[in-house]
Each structure stands twice: as structure tokens, then as C-alpha cells.
Image (cartoon, rainbow, N blue to C red; front, side, top):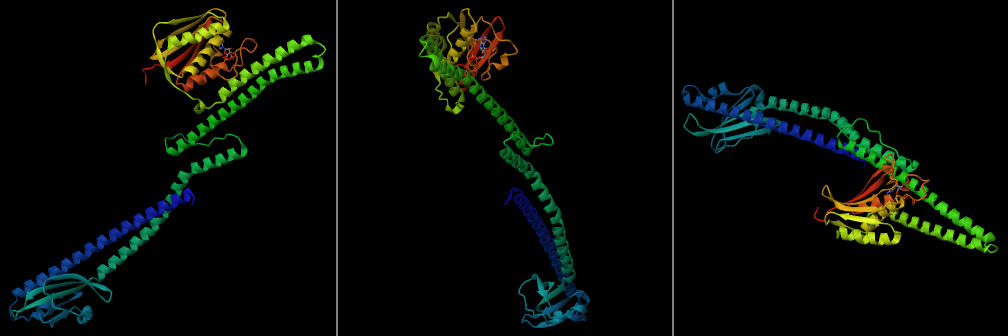
Length: 450
Ligand code: ADP
């Protein structure tokens, strides 16, 4: 069953059930109350007759006295202890009561009885008769008007229940619509997205704090994110294929040159093989970087250990110095111990050092210290710097400040650095002034911080 129909059905059944329950309770409470009060009334009458009997003088026959007291819609009967009737007086319209069976009751009785479908209040009390014998004074009084009133009440309650069902059904329908409309629209949008392959948004009328609005809003935000990621992915693939095209074209042209004239001109051979070799290395580097970037966060195997930064930086810088023959100065004011993944931190530091090397000539400075309860490694160069307008983009994949600057790589270094930092819970920040230099920083959680 659809959610909409289910909500409609459940709320309707619940409300109607509740209505029936309340009305039944009202009916029974009211009828009990009214019947009880009728019984009390009859008992009072019996007491009044008892009193009159006690005061009467022998001159007035008891039967005559009873006639004066007979209820207009009932009967008074006096029953002997042997079960025979001493006397019976009935109202004019209640003569049929005369034939109803009767017994001698040992104690006082009060109950509602039914003769021919009509309820009667019946009270039997023991009294001392004028002859000194204990007899039963039994009063039976018709409750037909009360039964009629109860019948009217029953009809009114049934009609009210039926009439109230209509707004209940309507409002349950409205409620189920209200609840399921945004969900249906979401399903519709999702189907359209699946069919067309375009990212669409749900139309949200007014801002509100209800869960359905928030659901729609979250859906739209998710769509934004998916669309952005999809565009990024597309951009990434197109950039990657573009970057791979250049070395492949160079390799292809040198290979065909070799094919055509390699045998006749041996001097071409060395040049071509060198070019093909260096392009193949560049391609390999690029593919390695691409593979690293394509990894999802959960695929990174992170192993956090305690790292004393000065010792770590000195070891990393030593191999860098040897490899590139560049001067790197380490400055550490204090011993800082961090929690990080050692190989990843090393790779990260190398990316920053490599950039400092590529874009500057002067000695590179590596500073270790703490700021704002974090450990910070700064890689400072006095090179060409990055224009302020370009700074926010340097972390984008394949972004290079000036493509004409021949020195750089593929523009993947810093985006890789950012991802490496993120998986370790660290952060990379770049401060730079064009023409003066760049300060690239790694912010790490301190060992004792939680
Ligand atoms: P690349 O491999 O091209 O260096 P990166 O992602 O590491 O790619 O850097 C992106 C761009 O930011 C580089 O192309 C370069 O123009 C600029 N850049 C990065 N580091 C520095 C630096 N230390 N000094 C000057 N420019 C830099």
C-alpha cells in the first residue's frame, strides 16, 4: 500500500475509532446515571408509602391508601411471605403489569427489569402490614419515556459520528497529502534525474523548519554537491587526458622520426631516445600522482604515530639537500611532537619543499614551532610568490599560476598535499606575496591534544 493511502487509512480509522469510543462511553455513562436516578426515585416512593402505612389508621383500608400512592405509569403490589399477592394496584395504562410473575423477596431489591421490551424500575421492600405480618411492598414503574430519551440520544450520537466522519476523512486525506507531497515530488525529481542524466532540484515553497522542508533542502544540497563533484570529475578527466596528450604526441613524433630516418641519421637516435625517455618518466610521474588523487579517503591507509618534528624534518631535508643540491635551513625554537602518519607527512613536506625549490633560487627556510595549540611546519622561500588573486585556486587540480612558467609540474602537487593533510587531520595553508616569496604551512594536531 502506498504511504499516502496508509497514512489516510490509519489516521481515519484511529479518529473514527476514537469518536465511536467516546460516544459509546458518553451513552453508557449517561444511561447508567439516569437509570440509577430513576431507581432512587422509585425507592423514595416506596419509603413514602411505608411511612404512610405506618401512620394510617385501621379505618382506611390499605388497598385504598395504596391507590392514592400508585405511580401514574406503574404498579404497587403487596406480596405475602407464601408468594401469593395480598393486593395489587396498577395505573390505568399499566394493567398488563398485573400478569407479570412475582416472588416474595427476603431482603430489599432494586433493579431494572424488562417486560415486553420496555424497561421498568423495580423496587421491593419488606414492610409490616396492617395485620402485623411482614410482607413485600413491590413497586414497578415504567421507564418508557427514559428509554425514548435514550433512543433519541443514541440516534443523535450515531448521526454526529457519521457527520464527523466526513471532516475526519477529508482532513486525514489532506494530512497524508501534505506529508507525502514533498516525498512524491522528490521521487519524481529523482526519476527525472535518472532518465535525463541532468541534476535537478526540488521546488521548495517557503523556508521553514519542518522535517519535510529540511529533507527537500538536504536533497537539493546533495544535488549541488553531486553536480559540483561531477563537474570536477569531468574537468579532471579532460585535464588528465589533455596532459597525457602532450607527452604522447612528443613520443609519437620522435618515434615516427626514428622510424623514417633513425637508421640513416644515427645522431637523431640519441636525441629521440632521450626525449622519449624523459617524456615517459614525466608520464609515469603524472600517472602516479593521478592514481594517488583518485584514491578515496577510506582507501588511504593511515597509521598515526608520535613524531618529534625537528628530528623528522632534519632527516627529510637531508635527502632533499642531497638530491637537489639546494640549501635548506631548519629553525626550531622548541621540541614539538605531533601525531601523524610518517610517510604521508614526509610526502607532504616534500611537495612543499619541491615547490619552494622550483619557484625560488635563494636558500629555503624550514621553521618548526607551535601556534594556536597546533604544531606548524613552515616552508619559506624567497622566490617569485603567487599573486593574491591566484592564491585560492592553487589547491585545485591541474591549476598552475602561469602556464607559461616553464618550471612547474602538472599543477597536482598542492591538491595532493591537501588530500594527504586531510586524511591525517592536518591542514595546508599558503601565504604568499608576489615577487617576495611564499610561506607554505602544515598545521598538525599536537601529540597531547585530543
Ligand atoms: P605544480 O606541480 O605545478 O607545482 P602545485 O599544485 O604544487 O603544482 O602548485 C600549483 C601552482 O601554484 C604552481 O603551478 C605554481 O604556479 C604555484 N606555486 C606553488 N607553490 C609555489 C611557490 N612556493 N612559489 C611560487 N608559486 C608557487
